[in-house]
Length: 270
Image (cartoon, rainbow, N blue to C red; front, side):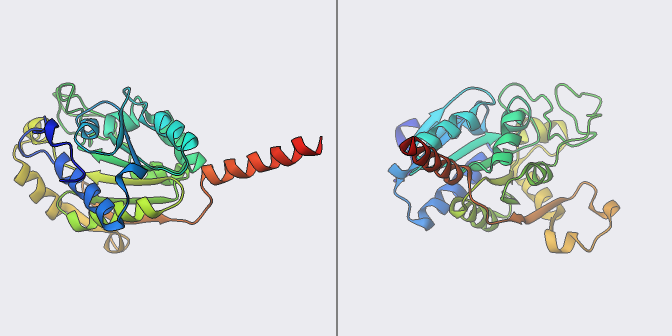
């Protein structure tokens, strides 16, 4: 309990929600790395997942909808010694915050982004999000979602993130492993944490229990190595899990420090 604010318990999360599993995996990864909690900053925006910053006893900021990444960028530039984590949801990160997300990836900003991906806007009433699967139902797609969703992994890869992984709340050990590796990685790290929302996504799509959604993750998750041997039609509606990108490239903070040194040399020469 050393990492939790017990006076803020219980959480507001619904019974069966997977957000607590993602939060526990994050805390376990931090504990495994033996980080001092005063050396960690966790930034969130708005949404069910973003309430996590109220429950954890680190340096935390609960900020504006879609703006967690720019706030986190400011923290990292002001305090490069801190390990900066962003906890965000699918709408927070890829809808209103989508522009910030892709440019943080492009810059290879030194952040660990843990994206709680429950395929829906949970806190604001169950609307479909940019990650809601095609033909799925929600309060704003009562006849089925006609839009194709983003693939967060492909979006992060194409935008320039240097560590990208995905796991589900059923695959808890993998989730801990990937978050831990993301924390150790220099540069932009993105972990797509597939989590369950039985209250809205599950209820509208006829899997209205947390355990039922976990069973769905178990039956439909495909390891990346196996997915590479399968045909595209075989992978439809499947969840590919694994590590997709792991590239060593200087992060933005290190590049910014180099720029500062060059400016100092130029200034002194003049």
